[in-house]
Image 1 (cartoon, helix red, strand yellow):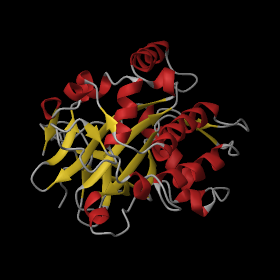
Image 2 (spheres, one colour):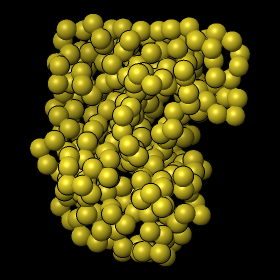
Image 3 (spheres, rainbow, N blue to C red):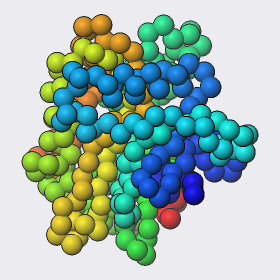
Image 4 (cartoon, rainbow, N blue to C red):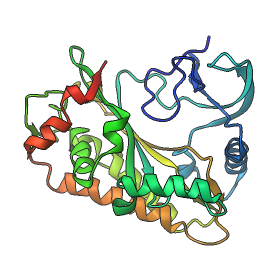
Length: 301
């Protein structure tokens, strides 16, 4: 029995008769192949990556498990459509907080058409991709059983400034993230989610070490997914904090050259996360920031 993912925060969604991904109860994620070369490129990447013996095991765990492709009834009712069959990265998680971060100051691969390049360049210039080397593509932060999730609308996320990104990375690990009237973000979960030997920062640094050396692939328009479970933290258990890489429709051969575009964006994200761990104290929001991050600008589910 296939169903629409509950916890998808970015990308095309299979709702309202649209073509989008589906999941099942066995922990698999079915992503419809794009009809142009992007679909075949993503299949080619997964096929190459999963069989490449030069990829260390500790790096493979950052990528979804690839189970092949399958013809399935499309979510938009258009009939049979080829789908990538992947690991559902949030299967079995209860109320996960998730952030999707697109890495790189440039999001189009070489040899893109001029139209596509201009389209991507416009998005990069209008977002934080150019100044920061990454941009937030989507997120949801779990508050409580009563408040549910804070899930800002796409148009709000699209307009995030560098200060907004800094703020939302703090909000992501704050116990009072869903309290609209509270103007101070306490970052009280930062040490257990971002910090520690198995926290998000340690995982990002592990990825960075590989990207400083690997010349097999160049990853354009690829995202880092940050996931954890607040309820586990409140029970004093491991947060389940995890970093994953997703979206590989624009991966190209590295040709023995380091992927400086991805590495630069990753280093920038690491700097932002490190600063929160260094100065985790309460952050008082300005009035303009309070309005930006109020529930009126998001969806509480």
